[in-house]
Length: 509
Image (cartoon, rainbow, N blue to C red; front, side, top):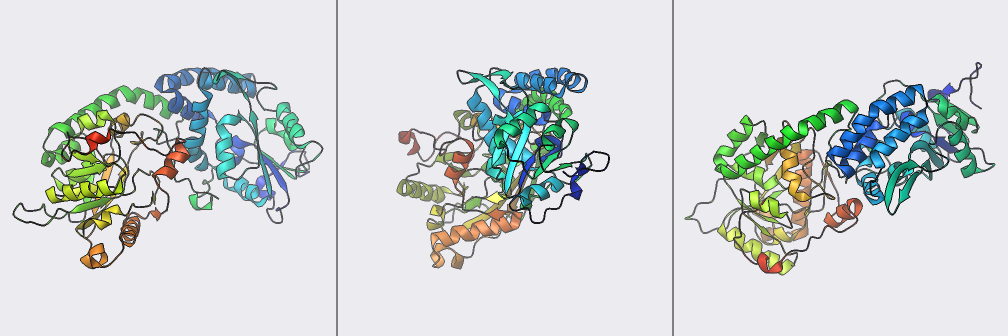
């Protein structure tokens, strides 16, 4: 066993990672595989994303009691309070959904580099944690390639969590050691990794044991992960520490009123005044490149097709703000509320290729048009596959690179009600939207110049990706929704209403 002369385990920097391909490693999670020791932020994410603001408030009020029990009674008692405050009465399916779609993003940003070095060097990997298994297992197995996850089991009744833990209780101290014996039997794993005294019992059952010291280190880089996290959901941008969670709850009422004001200003004022109004209300719109001039009514040529990367349903709105004039947009589906409050006109696509092509051609004959060929939003620095239909319909194409920054809330959702998307974006204290106009495509690189529609779509995807320093992918709308929501993202619509070329004002793409 790897211990020092005084009986204390050696630190993890003393553990060699060479020749470990046939070894088994067993690691604790908080403070070991992750840099942070506190599991509060992850409970807070589950509380807010699956239960809402009041559930987060309940957890925040219970956290002082959890801290007192944790430090003065036992680690197990403190965790039981967090589990009860977060999960009691919550649908297990909702917890599983958050664990699959929300938590991996935050877990992946907190991996300890020294633990990761040893962990990835071993051929068989096991994580032994006091956290509820239902919260951590999707990330560990899907993104880190963990073979076995042993965690605290929560009680359930008719599909809902009771808030209590099942026997043998929270996995700390002797319970961790017993769980390891049950899982491995007489086999003794080669390496045990922990960060605190309650990890020592299971570490002593391993052939070698190493402690991860609590020192400040940089997290594992994104490119070092075995699988990039391209899709994730949830409203919170930052990991909610107790202080940030308190600030978020205090900001929500004022932020919502501010969002209503911003949405109202954008919907009422003429588009040429919205840029200034948004600036005064704390919304920054950064415009780069030279946008084309609006088409002259005396000209017979069709309008310009703006082809945008897709960050939120507000992309066409901010494109119109950058142009200082409203332009039409096509969309797959938006909520009825978004339709009511929108300052621009859009037309829903039917997903019938022939009907959609005819509709887009008709709209271009009426003027400029914006389309987001990814078909759905992506938060990370990746571009999804561009649908090629637009390239067949016109050679008047202007690529536009859209990017935004949000401090508190994401303005998109795959699992929640999309009607709140614009409000969540505008609830950020100082949101930023960057609109970069690229050069209009020369005719020779369009379908009119002999290129196929797929070649044109792929070249525009690469051009926008290079401008934003993003990566191109072949993922589609269906891939995103299957990963986050368990469906293909299709929303039933009234096809008889879609045939109208000039519907009431609606929002977004």
